[in-house]
Length: 310
Ligand SMILES: [Zn+2]
Image (cartoon, rainbow, N blue to C red; front, top):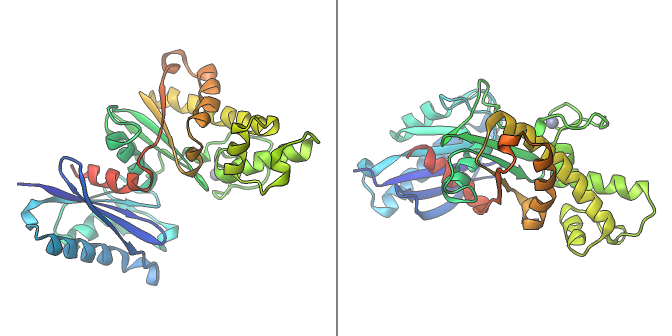
């Protein structure tokens, strides 16, 4: 009788681990360091070791374990193979095969942003739905697309990389991906700072942002205070993101769009600036798509990873 499963979220500095029961309740969570030295060869053996240690600690039977789900920061194909994950110093790694051999359990693997999206669909902002676009607004812009409860991975494991959709011809500075004018350059935390700096430089209008270090949080705090310049920044951000989401919705027709990541801590006010442009540009059938904020925070990765094996 399968009673438990593990959800593992491998990051560049720590591996977040969760023990779940098959109904989805998180029973225990902990972290181990990510050892990226020696081309990351220790990462999967370390994960196997911590899983085995937890099974022993909790007195679980091997037969009770349904499997292990793993999210990693890099492209992952349907077979659970990674061609390359820069942050882990990995070249080609067969996660499902290697970790399966190390643990003896069934293993499923996915890209971390896609896996976090699955977590939000299962237990978070997208709960109760089956098709969703998730956008993670952090230092960069991540994304995950779920259609009929399944992660869309694509031919190269690159589906859902919505942060690298081209949205602005005027930007000539390169994005981390090498292209110019990506959504990430105008809608991430650093992108919002870029928009604010541009606007501050283009006018002498007074703003609370002139007297403080310009961060995404400072911009949203100023928006909440009614600062006219900060509101213009929020409108530009919302137009870029809302317009882009209208395009993605025309491709994937989600029931709900969930926005997470550090920038989403601004709260419901952020959705107000995105939904207007979205509804203006969306195809008529998708115009009333629901919007919600993510609710799982850092647990989205381990939750989605666990869900992959259930
Ligand atoms: Zn890019």
